[in-house]
Image (cartoon, rainbow, N blue to C red; front, side):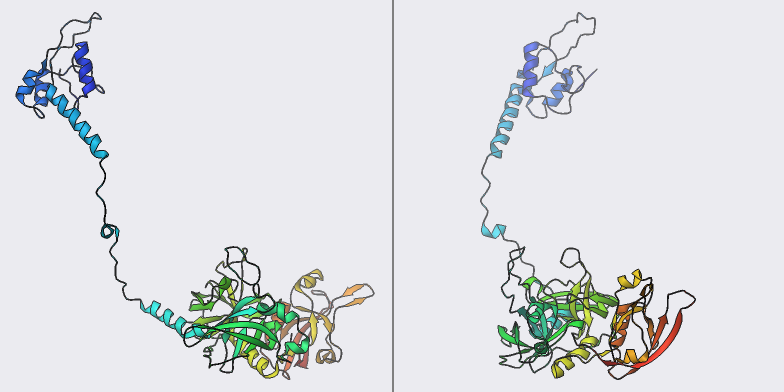
Length: 466
């Protein structure tokens, strides 16, 4: 039977066969000998017939002492073929060490693909940014300017935020909490702009594209809505006010853009959509602001006080807070609706304060209300003496002979339902001083037989500004 290898036998293997006198067998397959006819045929593919004849090797014949049949045959492999194989192997090894041909600079320089046209959406976003970026200011609290360096080796002062140009008179709007350190050092009359206290430094791009630095004085502050109005002191050229839009017509899913100075990186643009409406914002100033706009546009520390724009470049909100466990954007940012800002800013410019309608009562926190078994509504904690609420008969929480007696619980104002204290504060934003309202009140322990549902009418008075 004939056996053969798929590849050529190695030089070492042939040499061992010559020394031992055995027949040539495949080292990884059958141990049966190669037939002389097969070997001659295989050699002819790489050597001449004369070389093969000169290199014939006679195989030994015999019978194994173990009783197995003898392996017989002839192995034909010319010395010339062995020499060629060795030479070829040596040549391959030598070629592996030959130095590669030297590359030119042109060989390693990739071809540049020309930039294609931008999409219509990209063009629109770029246009909005370029039209509005010069109206966005970088705001620094002068009491904290040049604060300690933080992670990332970026100098981000604690009192660093954003503002935007409101009008041609040099008024700039930002958040109260951006300048909280400077504002805490002012007297109540100074918070209304008396004496024009200098509280901030601002930088804006001028018409030539260079940053211009300005000192800024306080015009007025409204802590409850986290809004501050500043006035540039050394204004040298006309400013470009931003276009003010409407937040009442904003819809979930529409595109929005935010321009600000996150972590001190000035004039940064981020984009996203309106993710939610009617959110209650717990601002860093400690105030609850109703009707907040939620967005997934990246808002980070330093964006506070900056504009949230719609797809036409109109301001629909003032970025003020983020929901996060890390201190950076998690895709949940909040903006004060511009409709609230539009009602606050003109009063701050005109009076230095906001004339806000109020009941002149103090409400218990929701936690205290629950502890007193009030599950729904706004629990009245105290009532101002000689106030319209006191004259209407509204009762506060008080101490009785048997313990604490819960006060009246406001469950509605006009046709609007009140389920917690924040609902009442938000509802009052829709009224003016002097408006007559009707309060729906629950008196007595909730669910008890002695509980009463009352309607009390009164006139709204001027409330506290901060």
